[in-house]
Image 1 (spheres, one colour):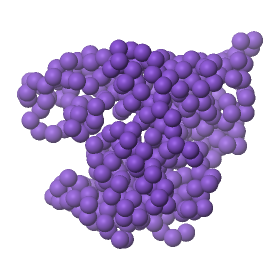
Image 2 (cartoon, one colour):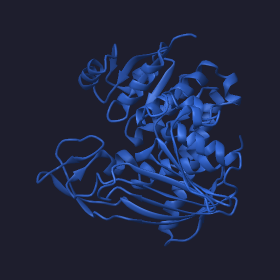
Image 3 (cartoon, helix red, strand yellow):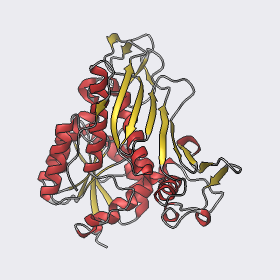
Length: 390
């Protein structure tokens, strides 16, 4: 297999996890890093043992020696970087959300298809072995037809008015906060596991913390506090939301999203209730899958490759009793991404289930846009815009 060369743009919270996952593959080189200015990029490259640094992402995107561009920047840069990478013939791996708007996401999908390059968005919870177990079991009819899909994604890192992050700044993160940041993960997971599509939404977002202190110096992704310093800023984006859902098979759903919920660190949960049983997976206990029954005892399936379906077994890398983590699931995703890139373009016809393409990201973008539209119109049922054909 030819050794691929990857370039990383952005090295804040998620960027180093791209580096870690790629290096665990063994056949891909992290060849360069781009940051917001050259001194910081060079310092970060030294910390991550990356040989080359760029002070501007354009130089990295135009480098003829780079095969794959990884985009791990603040949200507002995803669209221009991805568009430039595609124009330069690079394969693209982008963090979510893919773009600011549905129109931008649709443009990126069309550009990637026209250029014939690989394109993916890192909905990394797909990489967990028990997510794949639930997906395969539901597809095989193990619990019957779903009639209720519900869950939550709750965090507490924005609970105080002194908590700050670039994610609170619309000029960097876009119009939506909690729904786009973490609600997008839940929407992708729900559709991925059930095989259903969210058809209509009714959303009620709220801004629990209306004013926050913005520190004088820029801060990273999570949990940075301004303390008593900094200016007061009025908040316009939601930090909490409740959403009712209707799926394309008639199933109902409900989603709770919040980043102001004390004690919930990264509490992503999805439950599917169906005609013959239920299944529930929770990210903070990700090595377990709860299976509910009516006429016999409920089950708790522990992650063990010997107990999983053939479809899920490849994603359990360690024997039973050896716990696997968020980083392991992220590596599973990168393994499938780079196997697809190595086989591109023939691999395009049979991508692994963990790989979310720009088309999948466009579906999620359209779903979040429908939620924001629903709220703007006073909380009414709003259809998710139709998607392009495969």
